[in-house]
Amino acid sequence: MTRLGPRGNLFLAAAALVLASMPYWSGLYDMQLASTALIAAMFALSLQILTGAAGLVSLAHAGFFGVGAYTVYLLGAGSIFVTLPAAMLSAGIAAAVIGPIALRTRGFYFLMTTLAFGQMLFFLFHDTPLGGGADGVFLTRPSMMWTVTKSARPAVFLLLNLVTLSLMYLGLWWLMGTMFGHALLGIRINEDRMRATGHDVQRLKLIAFIVSGALAGLAGHMAALTDAFVSPEILDWHHSAEALLMILLGGIGVLHGPIVGAFALTLVREFGQSVTERQRLIEGMVILAAVLLLRRGLAGWRR
Amino acid sequence: MKLEARGLTRRFGGLIAVADVSIELRTGRAHAVIGPNGAGKSTLVNLLFGTPRPDEGRIFLNGTDITLLPAWRRSRAGIGRSFQRTNLFPAMTVLENVRLAAQGSVHGWRLLRGAREDRGTRDTAVAALDQVGLTAFASDLAGALSHGQRRLLEIALVLATSPGVLLLDEPLAGLGAEETAPVVTLLRTLATNFAMLLVEHDMDVVFAVADEITVMVDGRVLETGTPDAIRRSGPVRDAYLGHRE
Ligand SMILES: Nc1ncnc2c1ncn2[C@@H]1O[C@H](COP(=O)(O)OP(=O)(O)OP(=O)(O)O)[C@@H](O)[C@H]1O
Ligand SMILES: [Mg+2]
Image 1 (cartoon, chains in turn brown, blue):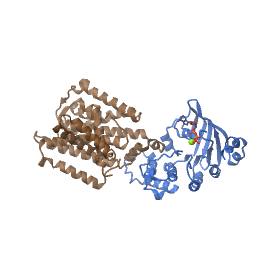
Image 2 (tube, rainbow over the protein chains, first blue to last red):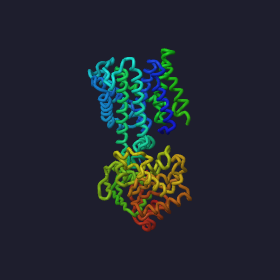
Image 3 (tube, helix red, strand yellow):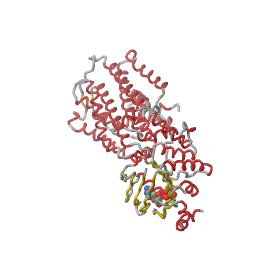
Image 4 (tube, rainbow over the protein chains, first blue to last red):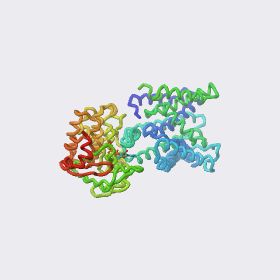
């Protein structure tokens, strides 16, 4: 997995500016749609340092997203300065509990183990009183620095999500340039040689798993904040698979691939919904075409 | 440094790949292990490195029992091994290959330093490349190197971990005659500074490098001795040397 250079990052920054200017030229619905895409991008990007970097394909990721989202509900109202770190912390802790067990396995078995753990988290919120009901619950948004009027909400959340995604991207961009980031890349390419040259592979993977889980929790937190609603569905493994699809669609070989993939899939889905009731069919065809024709995903088409 | 193995035994199902092998490596001495295909040479290297663990026997590094230490800890403790089948990071540059190896012992917060900026690992990596003569290829992809260059990089990866003990499993495997000479020179240099175990089929190389030779057949040590003693040994000639020409 490679990172964009300064020119590519400038391009991303320009795209972010376009999104940031949406309140001046677009309707409320489109801003909400942009928020949906931004949250999906955060979620998929948080998975990229596991999948794209270390080569670990996890189906537990939606569980961490859900833990982050439900943390907002469980804390009641409160302040965003409490809910946000709490969401990341609780998702990180969930990852720290699941990681050491799941990471004892490799390949297909890792996929299945994370599936099992993810579904356990799903059932925790779906079937116990903890989650407030199988159909989901509305929640009181935590307070922010200012009171946000109802009409200003789509614009405010759009900007908040945009800033969060940008910070997450910059953080991961930096991380992938560190020795830790390079070690993850080495693990994907040749785990055995990493061990033979002294790397504590198990520990490196666990740290990546926890960081990735905590960031998924952050995405979940932003989703809960944006929608004022959480439901157990967001913990379902389908949601993890969706993030993997976004990575595949956008490009598994580049850090920003999931962002491109999340926006592409959100737009395709929106388009599909507007022309047919079978929007999944369109989604499926677009993904197939992108994966078969582009191999490296939308973001990697030039190489 | 001193690496000492006593009574190592490893079975695979009914097959005894390594049977009651004892061996001692010290700094400044090259210990060659020779023997026919399937004799258990690679398995012995694997056991010394901790993957897999022996069924019986103990391994000591400078007197400390390391029999149960995992491979990555052995690497950090100063044991480096190369592989009979080239085992690199093909999609990365030659420099990044050795740099990753040099980074192996970095842990804690230091891991958050920039990979390109960290001077310590970079200097180690550059020195390792220089030692095997691959400096000119630093920015090539490892996967694009010739076979001979990949064998050199294989050794560079070991050197970049700053080891005291070298376990080299057929470093010359598949090299042509003209490619062999510089590697033999390198091995002779290394032999003076490291505790070295050298698995090798080419007897000319073995006699040129080794201070001591162990002959293995069917997992067992047939004989251990100086090159001269091995050359003269009747049983060794019958069991091994005789069959080779
Ligand atoms: N992981 C394994 N599982 C089962 N059998 C194994 C395993 N590793 C090695 N063996 C067997 O152990 C015996 C010794 O193998 P080893 O690779 O150590 O021989 P070698 O001396 O290195 O041979 P070569 O000169 O061909 O490299 C062989 O019969 C081999 O088939
Ligand atoms: Mg062998």
